[in-house]
Image: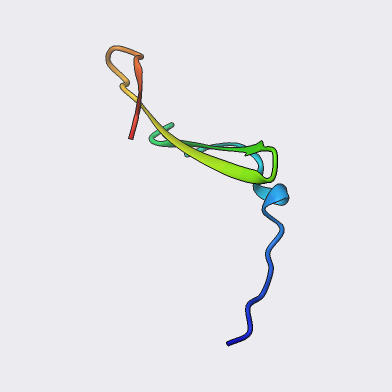
Length: 50
């Protein structure tokens, strides 16, 4: 099976949805990429991991 490589560096950054739920953050940590999904409570304005 042949695998295609995809350059994840083009996705690094913060991605916010229209209503800010959820916010997706992609970070580079050395050779690895980390994905964070954060939910913002609109009432309390508190952020929490999804």
